[in-house]
Image (cartoon, rainbow, N blue to C red; front, side, top):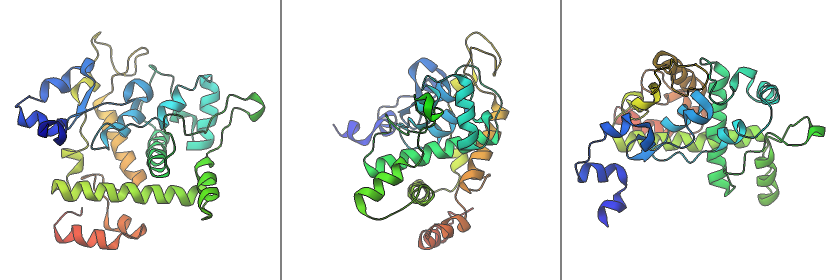
Length: 265
């Protein structure tokens, strides 16, 4: 009971189960630190990868996969992506991925923030977000402000989409700070945001970005992580939020405590 209660990561250590073989076998769906992947590269290429590497456990995020798997033609998806994330290159056809683009990092950040909002507001991330619609008369556009509309209606505290996104970003920033404190290191890129070996391999031997494959290119993934950290205003080298980012979100005291412990970049 104790072993199970501690979680799979500690269970592996307690029972001397090596992690390395799990990180090489795609069929095991293992990601890192004792938890599995959840809608990773097989659903949204680099965006799925970025969402999975950032959490301490099964990401349980459907923001990105609910868009890529919404059934709309790729041309329509790309048109919506241009409006939401700034470029049609934010999305690819599933299994026909292309090299990293800054808009993919924007989509990954959006996916992360929507998941945090849904967890905080008790909304269903398996059903939302609702940025696409099946209705032709709407131009297949959904509504990216549903979360803020529901929040404002239920609480009387009126916030628009941008304001609620900032609240979500503050939530995850605090999550990152707690992870850094509890791990006792600011080296998140090297020690926390890790990627299993199976992500970079394909049994057929096909190269990354070959149609029909979901394996990623190592150098391209480095670019993806860089751009993702840039979107979050975190330090590229360490993956830790900067003092300026903590201050931006009113977390000066958090930055001060981490600074005392040498946990700021």
